[in-house]
Image 1 (cartoon, rainbow, N blue to C red):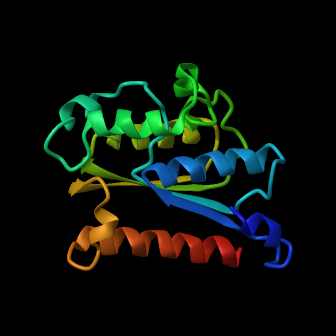
Image 2 (image 1 turned 180 degrees about the vertical axis):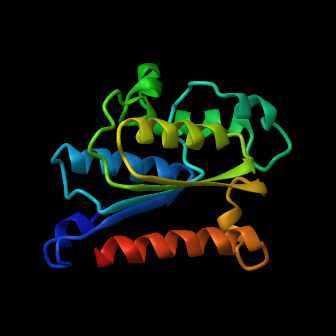
Amino acid sequence: MACWCFCPVLGGKVAVAGDSAGGNLAAVLAQDGRAGLGPKPVIQLLYYPSLYGEKLFPSHRTYEKGYFLSRRSMQWYGDQYIQKEEDWLHPRFAPGLNPDLQGLPPAVIITAECDPMRDEGTAYAQALERAGVKVIYHCYPGALHAFLNFYAFMPHGKAALRLGGKALKKAFAA
């Protein structure tokens, strides 16, 4: 986030990217940029992001146990971050619940098939598209949450990084 200070030095172009909770932070920063609270990113790369707080999706139940990330651990992580119960539904914690997504930068949203948060990424991609935001969405079959961390021996991880890299290169070239 400190790069915001250096954005003018970098030619005014900045991107936001993150995986899991980092995808949440990247989505919030993209919304902040649109609102004039920092530079507006040229692109947002969201890898299996957490975007909807305590709102439940079918993938939360389908993959709640035995798929690396559990619903129980998701609850625990959220509890460490929020201060008040109502924060679970605040757009600063749950950017997918922001009712106005128009004018956000283009997004690349990557999800993993066997991930409790898969449907959050899918829902956000659809919501952005409805708001007129250009979206590249890809769900990697058979992949688990955090699969980017295992890119050295998982082809899906390498492919997801290449997809994000190509999108970044194109966004910065424009």
